[in-house]
Image (cartoon, rainbow, N blue to C red):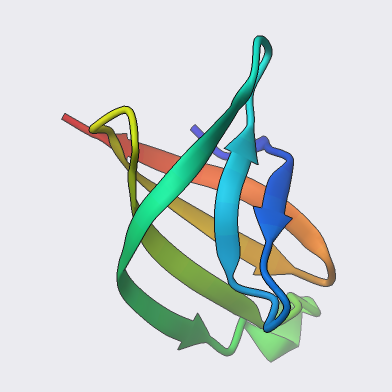
Amino acid sequence: MHQPVNVLTDAKGHPSGLDGPQKPVNVRRILDFWCYGGRWWLNEPPRDYYLLELDSGHVVEVYNAADNWTLSRIAD
């Protein structure tokens, strides 16, 4: 999937919502968080991954690399 997404963050920089086409969707809770160092030999920046449960009931995975948020996957 890997498409850009507008992520709203709290004071600590953690996702608090996704800015959708009609209205923002709030994050109900952060289910998991992990860091990926990136493949330095390909000059990939490090990524901070979040697995989020949204108020809509969907579970999504997003990551932040160099202040650019990306939607990685939507769980079924």
